[in-house]
Image 1: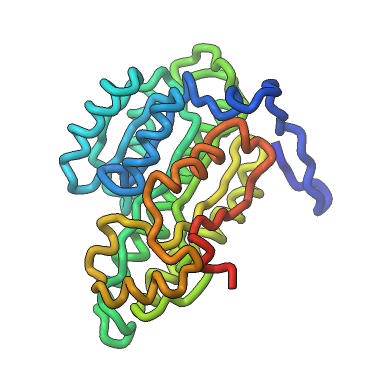
Image 2: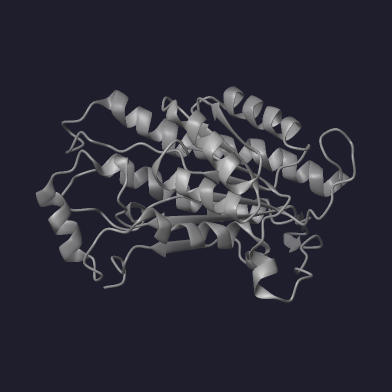
Length: 291
């Protein structure tokens, strides 16, 4: 693991993949993944993509009970284990308890966690918005990401150190965990025409949190983030057609992205194809941040 000695880092627990063919590197067969905020939108697309790649998947939702049916559909369609769990992402105790339960129920292991839960700021100018709504955005987007990383990281550190499942069985084919957070272009730029400073600040915090944790976790897990641009999901339904037209004008590709255009980025970070990638933030934004 990485440790500090005399002010210098020592690294002795990272491994290169054994596969030398492309498709095996992207396989998630036999791995356990948790995806938060997976009742719909980006999270649901990620869960479906991971299941197609062979992972057993636990999907978390807050209030969207349709997640129960969607989990059943994923299990039936892809022949993997998939269950839905209602989790309060703003409570560390709830997050830790849910992860512990899932690890126990999913063959005693955890390989991948995608922190995708997030809420938008819809109040406009910060001086006119409600302070309690700012607090909700920060608790969900920032605190929820940290709680998830901490609770998952405890399992990855134990798995790497002990080489066993949670019930003491030998852990097969575990090299390192993969933590992936959904950030946003809003962590890189100040969006217009909509005013959303609290959301922008929350996503900038997520990006830097992941970079910082990538150093702390280097001996047992990779930590990366993905910054989508404007994607067709429920989170932007409150925006007007005029607002979206401005988005399109400022995006070189001239449109919003589809959820399916994001899934490959998450699969890369989740799989052994990215064993030398940590502390990265990947923009998937149709070129919005390029100019």
